Length: 477
Image (cartoon, rainbow, N blue to C red; front, side, top):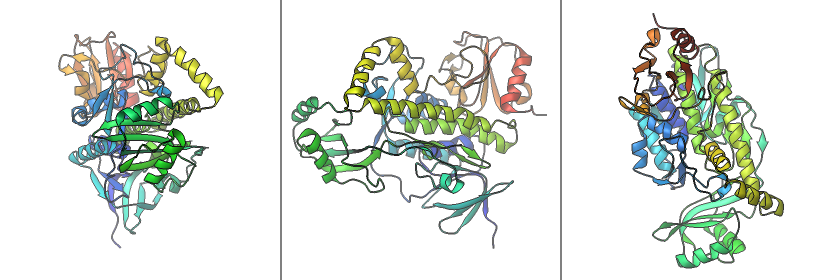
């Protein structure tokens, strides 16, 4: 029998998280194969929102301009429980907006990016089983073919085969309510729709115009059902009549789907040489539009760490920081979506809390806190004691070579040195150095990880060397 084909990393699932992870690994010349069980990309056009932190990561990797061509910028406000409050002024980002964009476009652009960097993508390939040992993972496909890799990453969604085969628990709450969502044409005037919609005060109901007679329709489902079966147009009509007293003459659907409010978090993100990311690691209601963003951010956190492990320079505990950093972020997202879900209830108690929170959000500090939470620009990883900036991401600032994020496209670390006295020495194969006394920064120097988070602040070479070793391993030579 022929020996299995060998890769450094096999990724199950070519959604946003899987495609982004493949691209991140290819920045470090890691041999990557992405297995996608579907033979064709998803055809229906669901509009998603890329939040501030995801837009920053796209800017870091030189992808933002491509995405902007296909999306619409919207204000970065009104996300939390759909409470209509304007975006706070002066959000700490050069990309302080929401980008509404079709999800298939995001996936296509990320997949193209990964392939351009040298990743292989195979469609119609489902993972049927795997075995791991001290040297790697043997992956068996549904066809019986076997492949071999040093690591396997499950980015294969909420029903992740990798997570189930790994035996990792996925505790949480099952769906209590389901919602129908789709895009379709309506048979009545926009004025009639707007007038009727204004009468209905239900957090899970809307008809929002897309233009050319097409509407985004959201309506509560009649019951929790098998979500593997897509809803029908008649399901939408029945529920529209139940909620609004009319079905608005909806017809010619572009796509129809249902989603639940299940909330679950994987007990661990890593077991040996197998890891989880994206919806395979966490699911939650789509309130606030955080799911796709959370998965992309998982991928960028994991990519450089896994590459470092494969390239042989990773410090001993570096890969463990993936779970240590990202699982608490997911816990926070699950909690804020639970809170938003309660506020969507039509019961008197939750509605009273909603009215109170609506008043509180008139205070800038409250509104700002919630927007920074939803858009993930409030994240601070625990790197130990130090200034508030330590562990946070650094916004895109002006430097002598243009914009800071333009220097991070290759997925390397960066020393931004305003003193012009420091050096990255034996780490120059992993960390770039920009000596720039004019940089728009109010601290002497910062060491940035490849994901843009601040790993060190100071001006002492010995302290810097300690942190270079902590994050980037032993110096070369």
